[in-house]
Image 1 (spheres, rainbow, N blue to C red):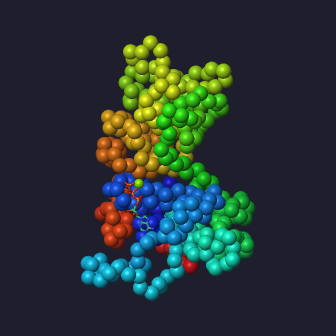
Image 2: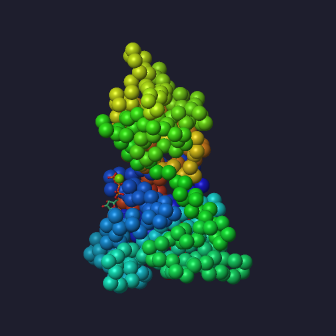
Image 3: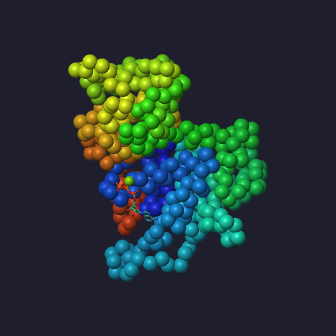
Length: 386
Ligand SMILES: Nc1ncnc2c1ncn2[C@@H]1O[C@H](COP(=O)(O)OP(=O)(O)OP(=O)(O)O)[C@@H](O)[C@H]1O
Ligand SMILES: [Mg+2]
């Protein structure tokens, strides 16, 4: 389980350390930093897939993603007595992302490129990475240490050089994840690769989830939901079929959903009281289809280490939100869940679930902060030094 997420100098997240629980609900006003936090988590996930530099470049590179405020803000700037200005820089420009879980922690520090004639001379560079054991980095618990192209792995009392030629665009997961050379790197990479993100399922008239599809056993619903019928049938076969029926009945009393095969293609049939024939996925309302997609995603027979749901309330009627909260609560017994939401009814229902961790974001001096977090109750966190 992830216990802490830390971000520095990414958009409005100037310095943020977030304590996490089994079920986490991120809320806040428009512009408070919810999407930025979600994107920071996605960027961290990209480190294990070799996509973190391309993803940052797609977002506009460091020019756009780096914290646009001053390195430090004085009390006089805060009170408006002097203009907000950047003094002489004391530390190098750096965008940092990290997390710590039950066993290991990881942090990555990206910075400005070294000047060159390359066509990619503006790409951010990975300057530093660290893997440690325990809840935060401290003297003596560093396991894997990357500085520029050089990677060292702790071995007994000393260090062994495990790589000397890492590209500035490559994370240590690219070259080091093998079971003999660096087992902790492999373990961490596989955990991060398991994180699952669901972000706005399509439910428009041409949405892939509305069409009959060729299907194979599908324990994990895809991001666009095209394999909804196959995922549904898989839950029925190897997962919790009773929970599937209960989730449908909870949201749509009296309704039943079945999967049928026609010409080798799978499709859903939605039976409801008062109709002579079942409705196909093509005939369902946007909200009903989205809800079925959430059921299939959340009742997966292969729960991931972390499931992230971005604004799952989209196009759902407020009356459906308590049922969605119950479904999310059920999923959170098997997997760590992170929900970003705007919907007050969903938030209120989630907050009633025992162990729910509400993360309320607020903006102060243009920086995102956690509501109610002070020096004393923020989790301990130390970034690796450059
Ligand atoms: N480079 C940057 N430096 C500082 N602040 C930034 C930077 N880029 C964007 N911001 C600001 O960060 C804030 C957080 O934006 P974000 O999209 O995360 O908000 P949100 O909570 O998702 O809001 P909404 O509910 O409207 O979607 C915005 O006010 C935006 O103007
Ligand atoms: Mg947003």
